[in-house]
Length: 485
Image (cartoon, rainbow, N blue to C red; front, side, top):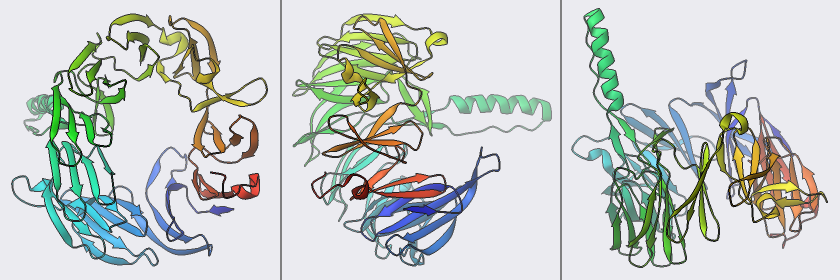
């Protein structure tokens, strides 16, 4: 089935409870290089195959937040935001508030957001919002100076927010605990540059414009790990283990403040490994920050087992791969290898980017290749003794454990496994609208017109393609039954 719309599809949301499809349209310029600043929101009833309502939207100032049976339309300005709850059946406004909504809990019908307020620390006064009427249910302080890094539920009532630390919030009443730490900083370098430029211009024109303020550097955090009892989390200043129920710090280990930025942590063999990339973010722009390093800590005590700093602060870690006894790291023009046990440096090899292209990342098991029997196999699994690295020229470098290139594979449009059920895998070819469905042996079952952005609901695969939304009934194609998952 195909749904065609008058402009290019910008975003879609399929409400599995109501069965309504929300489509945001956003056209492009005649040369298709630029997106239009305005568009339309369309609400479509899939079962009845009819348009229910439409609404104009300005993408410069407005956005739409959605969850099951919830639709929040926000208009932003320099003073704050105006939020409206829209009736999903008619598009009419149900209520309006001054909240900037950050999170929607559709189960409890509660939102989380901030109002513009005057006073010390008032910008960090977070409120629980009754999504039935827009009224405030509870208030608490939660620092948003460096933005929110993440938010997720661990049960029906508990929301975990990563923002200037870690916060456990009972979404029903705002109770919980807070762990505060440094997850961002203020960069005055651009302000100094602007001031110098202002002085120089003033000497010529007689008008002096001196700027004040700063740029926000954010995302100086790791992912959040958790087990049955505790959270594990790293920030700019420390790695911590926190009791999930009480927020009590079980242990904390200081980190080098002049190096630590965006990082990844994982647990293996009783150790917490940390890969600090040497980057941060300024808005949506990635910047070099601190310096790259790898480290390991005892899971029970937090004691540092090793820390190995890389030499080049402006050469961030782009990707890592774990072998049985080694850790491999990729930066744009070199590969390095360290022991997993002690963090000792083993070897390094530099690659000429003019010949091979800049190194990007290790190839994961989700990249597939067809073998001589025309069956799909995971590329790294074709030879587990080798490592596979993608370059920006679309080549995969196949290397041995001495970092010597043994062969190259052209993968300008790699085959990506973007969806997997119990019996089938869906392999998309690059940006083409071409997907193979394979069984667990790698045998091709069917070929369909879909991209890696497609998503599955029940037995229907949906995919947006320019100004069309394609709905593919998999039961008709491969004869799936109730046990196919």
